Amino acid sequence: MSKSMVKVACGVLIMLITIAGASACATEMAEPDYANQIVESALQGMSDGDYAKFTEYFSPAAQSAMDETTFDEASQLIKSLIGDYIDKEFWKAEEDGEYTIVYYKANFSQEPADVIVTVYFEEIDGEMYISGFLLDSPKLRGE
Image 1 (cartoon, rainbow, N blue to C red):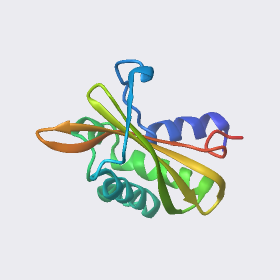
Image 2 (tube, one colour):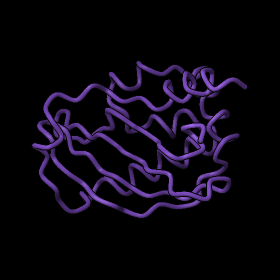
Image 3 (cartoon, rainbow, N blue to C red):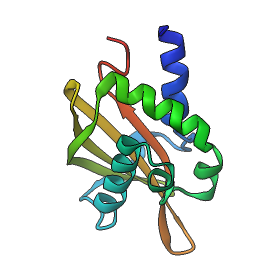
């Protein structure tokens, strides 16, 4: 599989909505109470190839950005590169304007290095939703 095809497929699954404001203005904080369970569900859903579970906590805009067919193709490609999701550890969190950005260091079965999971949360009608989801690791970058 070509590197450009990998980048395109990973880019589809690794949705990241453009965030207004400079990250230098972000304020660091503790792990939000809601984040662990929501991110765990998304990672398990991705690893299991379960579209409904993966997108359960996505904002309406994030859900509409990825249909089930695209998810299936991208999650299979990611699984072929880094394997199955094992676990994660909270790294840091910060507020940046209307977003809360939470970072985890995750372990996958075929990636010896940490997989950095970056999740952008947005409050909509009093509920927290994922509006951006990014995975980064040496194998995903093609290193």
